[in-house]
Length: 188
Image 1 (cartoon, rainbow, N blue to C red):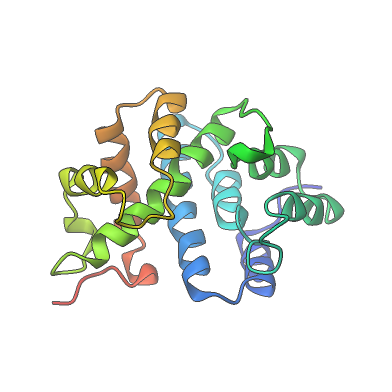
Image 2 (cartoon, rainbow, N blue to C red):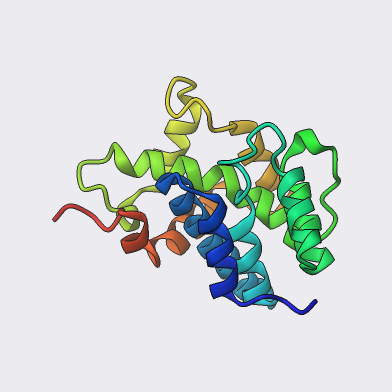
């Protein structure tokens, strides 16, 4: 099958995901994936759809995620590269990340969650104004956003071969482009 449209992927995400925060997370990861695809000269549509759908099964099948999602996408004849990237984005699946697509999804997933949390505790609640040093400081605070896996963030930057600070800055910038959809445009 050729790559489905973003609209088709959006409908699939919303069919399986009721939690509005999971939908926002999908949008944040999609924005980061599109930005990295552009930086790397890759297919922005494909990378965006991978970001949008990486957790679409989590709301309904948390114990089977992401394998259930991969199975659903396979049954819908999604491209193998898309399905593989989604399958490989969680360390516990033991599916090795082989491509830049796989590695980038892993690298931006947990980080986007930490960036949202760090933005929400700032006075202005504006992601575009979130300093990298604040994110790094929050990474060290194990009690803050404790469900975010800090080691995955570090490992993701390493696998991408990018400096952690530059990676954080890049993802903040990507998310700032969709701040209105994330509710992180600030409370001016």
